[in-house]
Length: 124
Picture 1 (cartoon, rainbow, N blue to C red):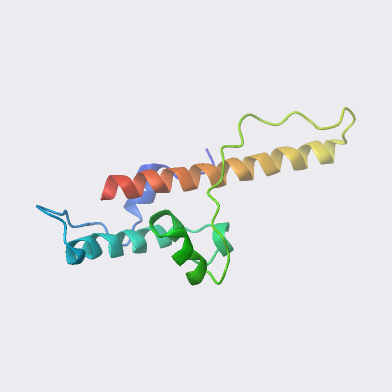
Picture 2: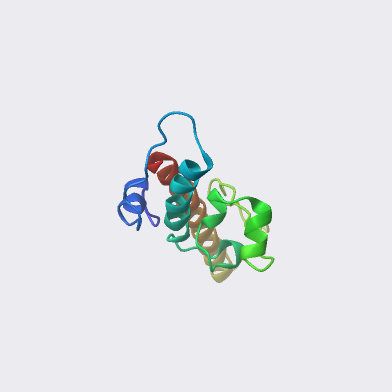
């Protein structure tokens, strides 16, 4: 497969227990949920957004993330779709292999980010 499932990501979260908010949400209750979610999101490695803060941007305001990351924007990857059609009719075997390897890497980045987002939502 090449990328972790929602379950694999969830079981490796440092914060396995996220408190539920019962009743009217208060600032304190929201912080009690948000901090463990941030820790869990940051624990999943990625090269996106500068590569130093995991998927923290999935649960953080984009402007705040820019400040935290020192100006590196986190752009959630788009699904790269099916294996790409060669852009040229004549490609060497090495060029074709490089195109396929890049597609695999892009697909893994997309699915890891997507599955981490699902795992974070499931845990809260």
